[in-house]
Length: 173
Image (cartoon, rainbow, N blue to C red; front, side, top):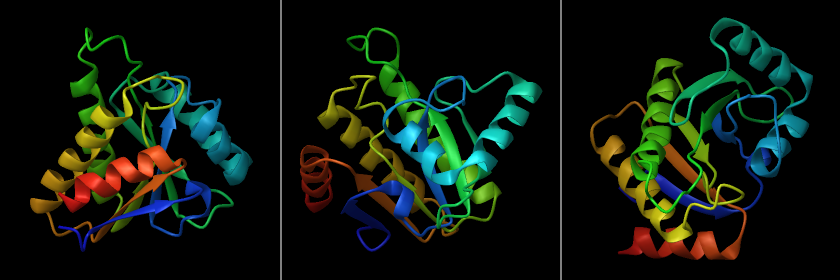
């Protein structure tokens, strides 16, 4: 599986893949962290497509995913998924985070994407514990990739050393 999964430390807005995944909020209108960085780097085209999605369905619920252009970034698409806010595991946060990965991967396949890059969903201002989030990400993606040949490469893009080392250790195990 390691040949289909890679880990890099860096800026997801600069990764050349078919789709990058955005850790979005339910409004889809941008925000802080990776969400704000993606909206800034991608430009107005992303916001325009997000507004069309909002008009059609009223945003995006936690665990679900929607897709837009990547605008000015090297990727073709942005898959926006809304991760759960951590509340001590009392509100099905683990399952919701799992769904972020599954739904993003399914949307990638539906749009003929063979490569995609994930950030560390929910580990910033949503305070999901990084080790648990990394375990969910690696396990969910590994399981999904074992069941399809349509996705050739998944890249986990870590912004900080702590997440990078967590993913590296999980994939080495």
